[in-house]
Length: 323
Image (cartoon, rainbow, N blue to C red; front, side, top):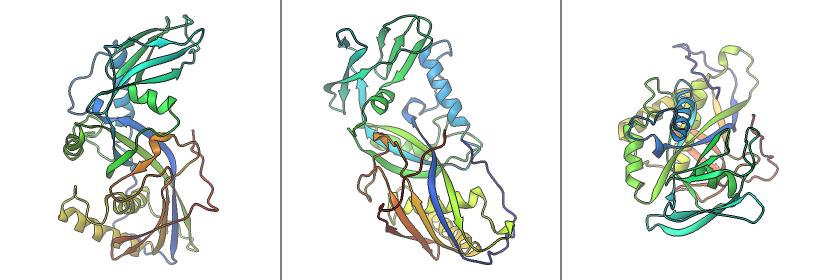
């Protein structure tokens, strides 16, 4: 994803005119964080699951040098039941997979319609079950899908909510988040892991600016934009007193947001997390907001404190993500 770090001058000129920002989603991707948490060695690349995990970590590593937003998400625990067998539909590639739901491991099934990959040399794959992965051997290639890949791809209707636990930025040259070594994220994960699987939802935002200012020096950097959007989203999903954050952090952020708001004369920030063809995993909720596939709100900053107002979606078309 784009979103490179941009360092501002130490003395940024003040904007000469009020600014109104609208932030919309440009790219959005879920990663199953549990698969990397703890930072242990990954399986060999020659192993199908090893290839899957290494590609996932490589993709996450690519976000660590950028200013992107991430949401730590909890969804109810799901596993493949390796003690039961799959079943095929008659004369079709409809595959029914046995699954276990929640901490109580309630038995259920997931039915999917497979598509034959272009490289396949078999008309029907051989199937291998692991508790977290489905491996489909098509002869010339092996397709590796996690249980949550299957749910996200083949269940268009929401089965479980995606609960936001924390909002942050990916920028981390040490790459701890990509390696599953972020202490804070791991603590939050451990607090819910008995009943939930945890994910990183990483998003890049587009920001449109309305202003009469014309000087290029008055344009905010990606870092500034992300800091302000992050502050608004923390208030929206984590509430007025986020439990996962210390008072020192909250105070420092208030001062930073107040300085940025005054520098750029930011009158209003509108945040829209909805987009066309968002799947059921994007049904986001938290302790402070009801479940919705589109979260749309307006934010003004009062001495660095975000003040929010939920907006109606009427007359606001959804954006289409860039491929």
